[in-house]
Image (cartoon, rainbow, N blue to C red; front, side):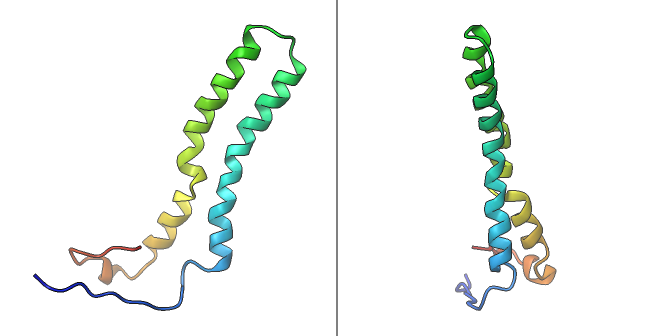
Length: 93
């Protein structure tokens, strides 16, 4: 078994702008919350006002993978050197 090779260097892909973009995806979680608060505030008290928070949880669970910035990270990691990713034990940490 070959010893692991760790390469340490300055960030090339995960720059400040990319980190801000990854964290901007978290704003997606605010949208269902704001819509739910607005709807509950405008509607009369009833069954719908009880169901809206449940729908909020469902919408948040649906948007959670996007809110973690996964699409941006996949795009950035996919643009790495393809030759380096073909080896068996290549990981991006």
